[in-house]
Length: 134
Image (cartoon, rainbow, N blue to C red):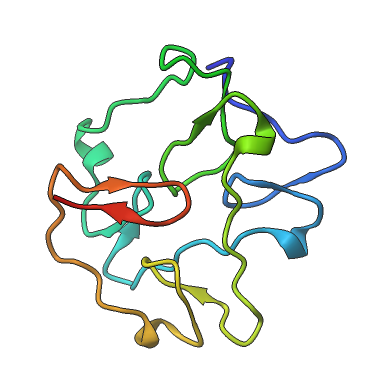
């Protein structure tokens, strides 16, 4: 395996998102994709993901000059030199438990903005949940 991938400290729990938290109640809310879409490794919701076709390169944080890969998944890769520098996940409140692709929280999936039908190669996912486009 990649030595730069971090495991949670024994005092923390491993969330289903891949993040580490003090308690499961403090785990970030993962993006909910509509039924006809799946969540890709970059955090986007698509009918087919770049990694389905081997199009997405695996990021090795060590070769990028960092000490570790932050313990998170499906939000884009984040490399840092310290766990303290890793982005924190979004926790949606109980009254709005659905996390939309744009990182907003909603009561139900129908209140989320529509999923883009086309993604360009220049659109990049950032760990805090935003995307940069052309």
